[in-house]
Amino acid sequence: MEDKKELYEGMYILSATLSDDARNKALEKITSGIEQVGGQIHKVHDQGRKKIAYEIRGAREGHYYLLYFTAPKGVLADLWRDYHLNEDLLRFLMLKTDEVKQELTFKQLPE
View (cartoon, rainbow, N blue to C red):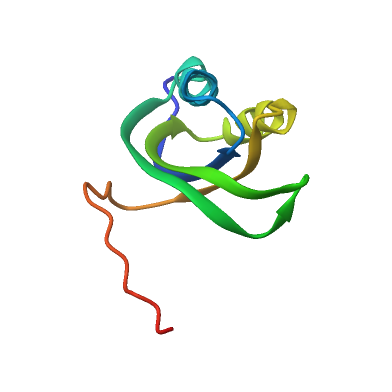
């Protein structure tokens, strides 16, 4: 019996001190981990290097990625376990979503 797959939105913050090559390898590790548990990547939004609201493991900046992917129910715990072992990954958050956003738009904050 095949597990039902859910659509997820994942935000990943990688260390800003990584070289481009190392950052690409870290992102590949995340995407291949999703695929290894039976998931499929639909869209990757590279949000670039941004300031973090608070210091995480001594870092004040990170490189942000937003991924849309489908994965079988029940595999998120396996992904979380792998993410906690990834030294290049500062923070991550995965939420269930209804649609894949092809373009991201944000309101400007008042200054």
